[in-house]
Image (tube, rainbow, N blue to C red; front, side, top):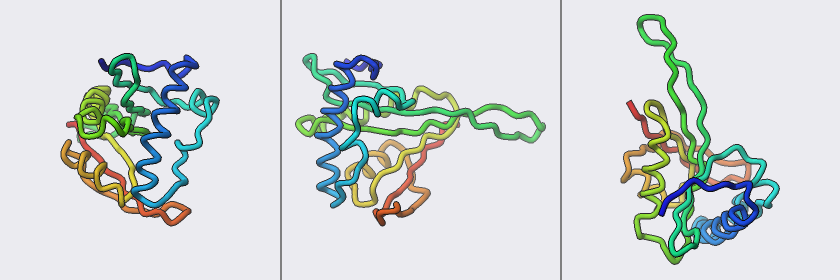
Length: 163
């Protein structure tokens, strides 16, 4: 079952923190970088964030989640009118390691993408995180930006346009 998660509920928030630590530790090992912020996020930090959360529940356990933020983006068309498009940024996408390769991440992403009708969806990951990049590309994302963090970690930003 997939449902919206209330990060302000202490029980749900603790499940989010536990799940993301297990999942992001796998990523940290894969990319050789243990400074992923979600590995040390506190309950208070989580509850202060402005992200919306979607969870994948299996046998009453949270086994996957996706979080995102949206903003309105004004663009000008030829008639001089200013229609509003949305920009959705995927902040977190995690799956419990015991449930990798079961399609959970894809399902969560597709439902999250439906949050906007028209606009751009952005996501950032480490360049060495080949499984994540492969998943995003399979779902129509393209790499459009390479950069390094202040810690010199090579990153990629991917985007997907919804017309």
